[in-house]
Image (cartoon, rainbow, N blue to C red; front, side):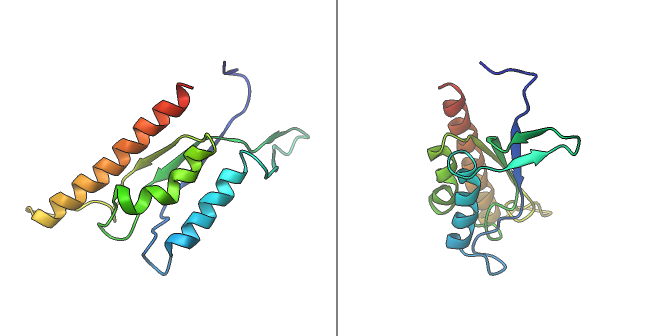
Length: 135
């Protein structure tokens, strides 16, 4: 079980934006691989400044939006970048940001499709996280 008095680590990632601003899928995968390593081979400690520390050992990663290039988030393109977290037993949840969602006045077919794909990706991260936490 989980001891509520023990510290835990939540890592928040925002604006990863693969395929945007010069960020490549391979670069973002390397960053995610580095995060996943905290669960296995990489050992570092958070120092409280009062002589006590705790190991950085991710219990959860939150992707706080701007998952991908402007309105191009998709399960097929983006899940392979983040899947390595699940492979290391780290649940991750995604929320959408302003680059993931069309929120303009009016309606566009393309915007509806982008929003559907972003919702699908985010929903899948919740399902995957629930599956990890049940084991």
